[in-house]
Amino acid sequence: MSVDAGMAELMDRLHTVSGPGVEVTAGLDVQVGRLCSLMERQLAEERVMAESITIVDLAPLDFQVTAGQPRFKGYRASGADMSPQEGFWWFVTRLSLAGMNAGDEVNLYRTSGAGAIANAYAVHMFIGRASATNGLAVDDWEPGIAGLVMRPDDTFLLGSGGTVGATELILHGQAIQVAVPYLTRFLL
Image (tube, rainbow, N blue to C red):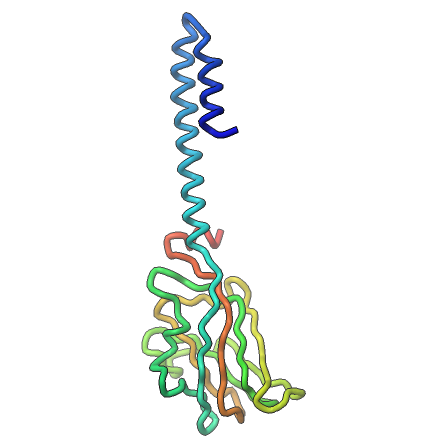
């Protein structure tokens, strides 16, 4: 039964009352109307919130490794491809680094603003497994829902965590994208 049909049935039942009950009917009518309006508004808010929280695939970032140091490939100016747009935050749920050699150690940095590793701290170290064929090692990291939060001015950089023998690395993953007005409701 829809809200309108339920209201119509209530109104039919209450309008048959005569005498002093008419005042009660009018008061009840107003209260039920307010309740229905509140429920409709809450449903609309929940619909908007559901549309404001989505799962996104992070665009792969290509890194060229020169002298043991990963750098963005020449056609990329920065890691902005793997950063949320203004008005959104990302809760990174999975990152994978592909292309490592066995024994490679590559640090992942989350930087803000200028994007220099000197001003950042390593949030994770990817390790090329010893059993992997060179250039084919993949390491996954699942930081959890609040383990790696990205704001619009944050970017990813890679740096040597020891030995890096790979020639090209590809970083990709997934995140939950949340519109800023819904951050607190998402986290509760």
